[in-house]
Image 1: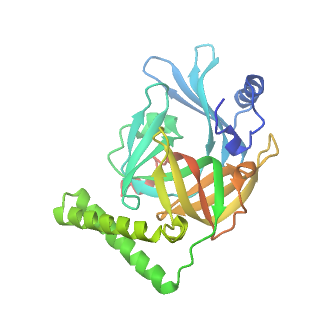
Image 2: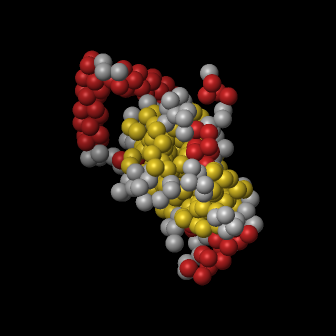
Image 3: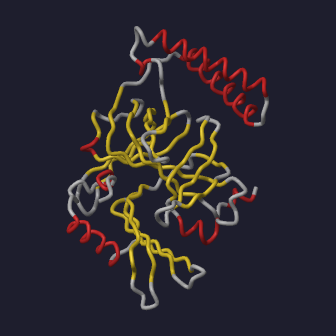
Length: 296
């Protein structure tokens, strides 16, 4: 049973019988089907069904010569409508199944961004030979545990100063990646000063009045993160099959914008634009291998 099914409104699917019934509906009434002809004369197939706008379930497997589908695995998804970044991306196949993860470096985060690839057939058919140039990446996430916290109070002058500091730090990171020793030394000193400042303020202040947003790895899975970000837009979606309501939150964390789907039952607090979301997420990504922008 996939633990993130509840994130898209399937919290009541708790046993194998209900799951098999749901998977049967997807096979019989798919919204989308993609096929890739493999070198061994087998057809690798993605069968998807949407249960509301942007969210659904995808089945992956093979189709035999008689047209029968054999499922290898399935996963719930939430498709973002917003381009989060445009970077050169490494696509890596997972060892245990026909699933792939994408990895790219985003200066805004300062670390490698790893996500579960949604459109594998597109990658196998069109993108496998193109990964040497930047692609638009649409990031989304599923969450089964989150809370709403209040925003930080910043005056206009402080906000401008923070924005200038962030831009300067990004320039240093870009230079450090090229091997600039002065930039590396400057970043090291900045990190030491920041650690000292946080340690001093944390004695008398709540940590969330010091740290506005954060994006850090969580657990043993490479595509799981703990995020703290500002809600810049939101919507409420209804699962057509179960009737459960799901929050669609557009989050800005470290200036990276992505959409998060979380069941109403799993979110503590009332989401409002301007407030912050804190939670654990499973990061997914859809790469547009056919974008005309890739040719620029």
